[in-house]
Image (cartoon, rainbow, N blue to C red):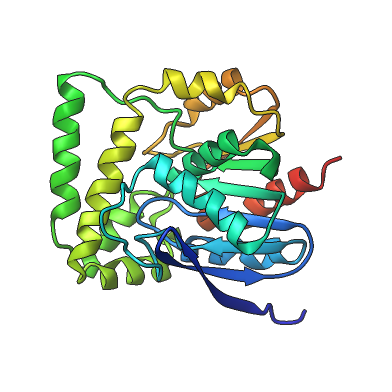
Length: 278
């Protein structure tokens, strides 16, 4: 099998220089990572997906090798707008797309703003379906998140925290651990992380208006969830079944929050089967 050629490209999106990977050929497929991650989150599934599609894999602003712009709201609506801007800048009129965790939330918000830009949508352990307390407990939890996101972390601490996202801690990828630990030396990264987590947390305190809008999406949607996700419960896939018009839900057993890393073969089989459906 020939070696996959992955090209590194850059796009200027609202003043931020955004890095993205471009690999494969065919129908374009955009992959969106979650908070704290980057394009490295897709390395174990990239080859299989790029064998069938032209795969576009950005580092969202503030993450990976993309710029950390000043004075921007690192929240769901900002990232949703960036997704739309990326498609426009690259010249992609209609794509399939996969979003993981907060990247899934950004993807659905982008699709709500521009529904004709998306053919098929895959949401992986998505944010936006697990509610958080909208009371004094929620406010206290937000303060704790702000504090934790600000604490300096060694590679050992980064690795320990990251491994909690997996059913099998040994499945965690060293590439992501190395990248997060390296970027911790930049004080702007802590600010981005703190703002991102808080804004996403606040968004999830009032999900009803978002869920009402999701009924407007007519694109076929596949939801993939790890059965042992400790961050977002797989039982919340029932919410996705209720709010989407055209949805298929697949739960991967013995899998945590990152199926594309922990169970890449099963994950890519599900995605490719869904994208190839008539």
